[in-house]
Length: 329
Image (spheres, rainbow, N blue to C red):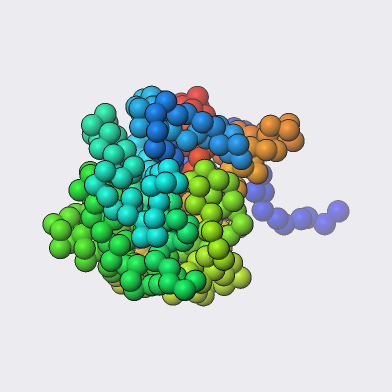
């Protein structure tokens, strides 16, 4: 038999400790950002039917949730406000009210856990009667007129104590408007975590149930991106970087790993993967049916997001992952 010449790659996979020695990508608790849905009302801790294990939580129950989050070593949360329908209007005034639900929740978090990083979702859709992320006129979502309200929302959230402003509306110029407003109000050191690359996606379905933010007419395709487009993502991210963004979010994540890698390769800012509600619910449903091993597949999925270029991950699995990582120490 002729002598064979080939590489023995399996040498570096020969044992658990050998594989750990050469592992390239790691998931840490510090990478995790936990989303919390805060609702108006009292004594509310209602499981979201399409998102098992995730709850709508009223302010009087928020401290209990924070105790669990902090106890698991999670250092960052992102807050989404869910007002009562009768408190919504065409301008989304609840988004920028000093007594808005996110503003109240932010103050509560900072009082209970001053060192916890509070990220405020900055959008209008949860607060508008029509469910769109901007002002509407004759069925058309207005861009420039919406910027002023988004800027007011960002400043109001910063005044309440938010550490990071995360605008998710995808209006053109939203980062520039928010950055200018924050600076003018004296919040020069508050960073902007931009939803720079946000696709119009069916993966958001469960979130819209959780946040009660389904548009009352039409869709969001005139401001969220076409999922078929790749170069457009780079144009969007480039604009946000030029306008003063400090973080770049790619949303969704699971079907957009190529986009995440493109963004990471092209921009020298922290990249944030948003592991969205539909991605969460698919795994949860399969796990509840016994079709997959939840822990193994979640850790594989989130690690793949890190490998694709994510520095941080917004994920509803954050509490579970923190527990699993703690077990491995």
